[in-house]
Length: 272
Ligand code: ADE
Image 1 (cartoon, rainbow, N blue to C red):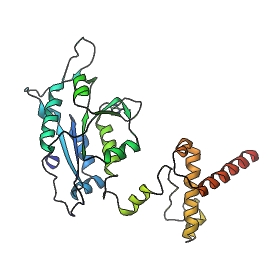
Image 2: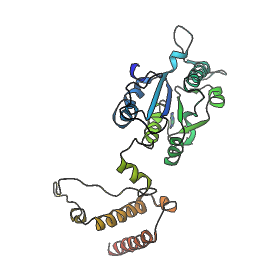
Image 3: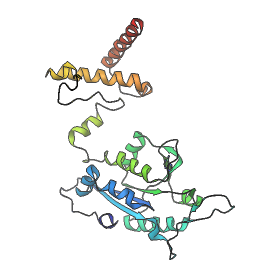
Image 4: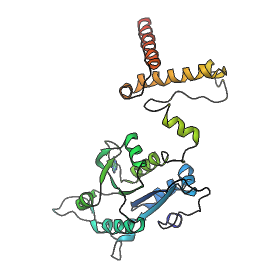
């Protein structure tokens, strides 16, 4: 696990980070699944630049028996295995010592609160995070009640383990950390896009297999392009996720455009 040894950040930062880096500690029995995700693309760059410090901890390193056992049969009988509490307690102690205090600790489990962009934003505002990934039939209840500050689920389906859920959270949180995205992207995130779905994107060629590009995007008229984009964002959100509009920041112009779009839709329906 060389490059993600929890005590180092692998490469030296290439630029000095503005504030303290975000520390992300992940506990798993399959560190290899997560390692590749942390070593590519934007997350890799954020680590190289010292914006993000990652510790990937193999739960088996915190077992005390020769076989590095992380699970056992359930008390009370029944099928399946349960992940044992002691290795989790030992790794949380080690991470607490490493970071100076116990980070906010999340257990990923289908029984948790559903993850959302809002929660990603809140978690990105903390100093760091410790994510515990479970497996098998479940995890000893004492891990949940004693070590976890919060339980998070990706959605109402059951995965084989928490690793993919942890990666989703890591990605959603990392891209919100200051400096991780380029200035343009971050700006879009903060202002324009908030609460609405994105407008359609196009790039060259202008025509491909008979498929064109909306004329306005080729016009060079930036004012018209902005209006078109905002209109398409509203159209998409109305069509696909109308409930988002209740919380979105809408201007009077937006509301006027929405009235037009509704009229357009009615007219279209009447013609069909
Ligand atoms: N582990 C298994 N299923 C999960 C889910 N839906 N969300 C988070 N962790 C999980």
